[in-house]
Length: 105
Image (tube, rainbow, N blue to C red):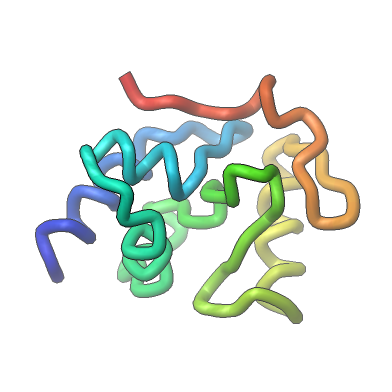
């Protein structure tokens, strides 16, 4: 596992249930603009659900990808997991984004 991926996973386990973060927030916290590299790390997550990659969305509030896919049953699974944690989603968009967005300190 790359050092970058390990750092992504270490951050992600800090995101509590019922909160979400974005690829951009994670990248910027790591001091980079490598948003796609964050997505690639999540695609290769070796320890889901302990490393809760379903809690990462696009900055636009769109659900984004899950398990390397951008549609289909994988996205439905991501939506299910987020809704189970209390995240409000309509038509693939997070409805209460300002209230649930998690920033790392």
